[in-house]
Image 1 (cartoon, one colour):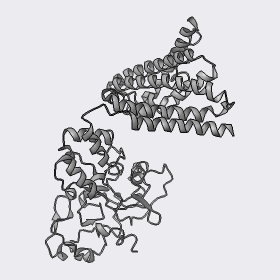
Image 2: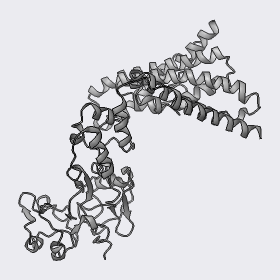
Image 3: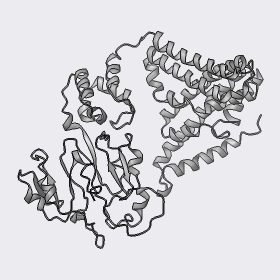
Image 4: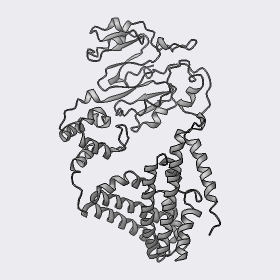
Length: 191
Length: 279
């Protein structure tokens, strides 16, 4: 049990997927302008990470390892994750339109996001069990959501700040991201 | 051999699952039939020119308020008569496609002389920062292709000899993405029924001393005005340019013949009679 908590905390804070592993930077800078969409994005990524971890764990253990073709994991994982997200999108579009509108454009956007692929590959490299994979995916997703929400909160305030003209927009956002990254390095060494 | 078989098997399984979900899962959500119907008519390019985040969102908005089609029209749909008819049927409105549909026109014949060597970033926006561009005319098309880069239809090409952008009118859907890109504001969206256009943006009212127009630029001689037999041309005093009243124009081409600077062209024959190509 304590092992799972360690995995959860380490994936969420210490080895944060965005600020420490530098994965998923595209949504981190692209969708972090307002709090609400960035939170939805974080939720969608968490969900897809969980589903993708489950699917890739099964594929890895029952197909790749069994037929001795582990070296093909990247292409197989991309294929599986992409089609899985498509199936989910199609399914909720047909059954629950409110949920579909809530996910909106985010679900297709994260189909081939490197953060999602990264978590599944980390799970594989660390030889996690199924439960540990799911916990690690949950931790990564929560860490992703946390960083997205923090960044969006700061950027909402930054829009009102009187930054020099040349620094407005992307430059000041990147500097904010750097400071945020430094702050998260403070977690390193806790576990 | 096993790895090929395994990969093919996984891919097949994935495809099969998507197909099964697509076919077998019942459509439980009601009230979307109209949206789906409209969505099928829309081009599906998700270009965003209508102001909605995608074609499906536009279809959803249209199903709730059909008059949106005139306020923020989808130009890609309006350029296809078949789609227009289907959309009219689906929405229960009548559309005047020629009224709403637009085409992009680049108001420059591109004969301006290059006055200095430019070796900075190869975008029009960067080049326009330095002395208003590297061509003699401050309203010249610099031909570095900012407009071509954003065109979703690949309708804009760069003429390699004259180094200016040309719009293929048959491909242009009038989405207007290029208009914002041009740092010299040369691109205008004109109604699709426009007949004659003036290929010059050099206007005396915004004259810049020492920066002259090229030998194809409009010199305000008003010969076209006198040549017109149908009162289809009038002089805009405020802007100092000739304006063409498209309703009265019969495309007799008298003005085009009268123009010594070859600044006027027939938009429908833009590619055949291009003053640049004709040389």
